[in-house]
Image 1: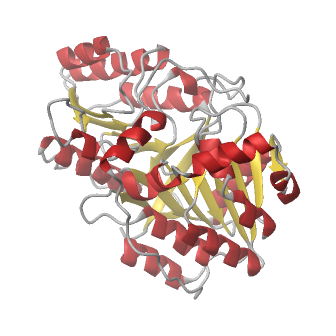
Image 2: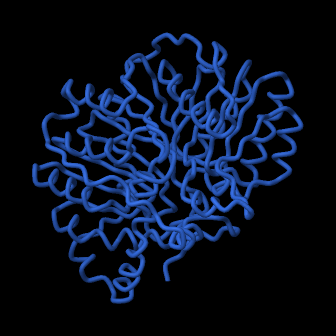
Image 3: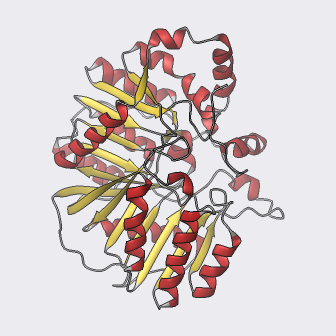
Length: 425
């Protein structure tokens, strides 16, 4: 049997799926019908993404890529410790351990010194948080909200089990923002140097885009607490600091927020040369598979990097593998990352358009979770992301159509059984 990363018992996909089967799952919107009309480099693409889906792309931003925990956590903690007025943080994963304790102490220290600190943690993703962290922070004045808490006496709990906040947001004084794939847990420590340390990216954002990150946080703070955070301490005037044009794209299964899947599909339809996608969970639906195959027929080179034998959710690998046949047969390249769990979430189209953040390439991110992606239209930034992608590619194993077709019988059976749950994963 392939190895899995051994963890303490936590509420995860493997726990959610059987509950979902009992209460049902929404079928979602009908299939989209998209025509290929323009490329990501054409003005029509920016107009469409910024108006059909929104919010409008804004200029003047600078984004710094933080690769792996050793480069992610220090600047986040430094930013927290430098806060003067406000700290807003939202995360899916907040677990006990060295990282959780460090963030709890830093947030508590700032709150004790008069900074307004707000923290949203997900009831499912952060089920392993140490209660001592909660007490330490609340005693210091940190305001903590739990997203969609699960209560045994609430008959709507089962129906709400699928709706999680998967967002990872940190905004300091309304001026510096962080987003990406990293959770607050020791699994993200180090430099992807062992199977116990995830491979992941996070991003430090400066410029007007920070206000859109702040808006994404405030959206869920309002939904969770009813309290409106506003004023210059949250939304200061920000001057341009860099060349990047971008948007913070947030989605939710409730309200009027835009559709993450449609954003990905519009990007795929606008590709002319290359599509590079890194994702922790790759379970596309049929309409997305068809769009990818259509793009390949147009001559677009398409590459995916997904987790290999090291994966935190074992059911996802066979469920994903069950869908690979038509993609591989069409010439789409799929690679499995070898050293450790691959948790990156990134799409680069034509070395110009980049989408990265919290969303995976699966139904849970497309239709069930609250997600936030940072979308950047900038050749220099896209080139940097492609270079990082290629570095990961060098540590990955390509799976050919012939290998997929000739996989052992027990794998084919496992793939078939896991595929039953594809719409729930």
